[in-house]
Image 1 (cartoon, rainbow, N blue to C red):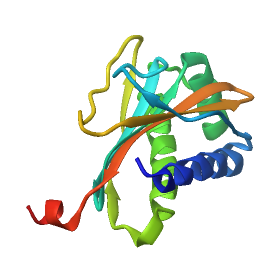
Image 2: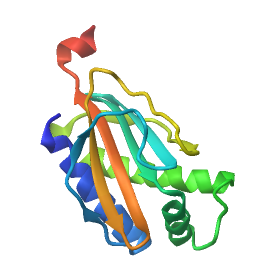
Image 3: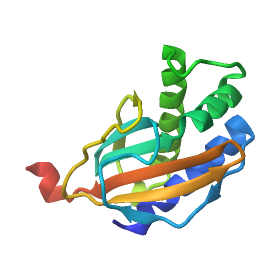
Length: 160
């Protein structure tokens, strides 16, 4: 995967978390992920289509997600609530939207409505031909991981 597609996610999570949550984000060393299980219990998922296709996952431990949602909404929301899932979905939406706007060469990319999966041991199946880059992040609320499994689509592939 081209690093020019990873850098926008790093910048976007730092921007979204600092402006919306007043929460600085330290970025760890990105690595290639080798299994389909997210790092943590709660995952916000966005699909991408157009010139770039694939998926983006924000994965949180439950405690971290609860703290971040409280900062985001200004109120305590139970992790089993629909409002909690909506807040996680909106965070992954903002991070993904900010990143796609910064993709190189003005790529035309659409993002899907977010999905949120809550529960230990869930699995997210991606495209087998697309490597997933895992970007660990540290905040005062705890760890967050961005999983980026996207690839650029050639004009010939789009025409087919």
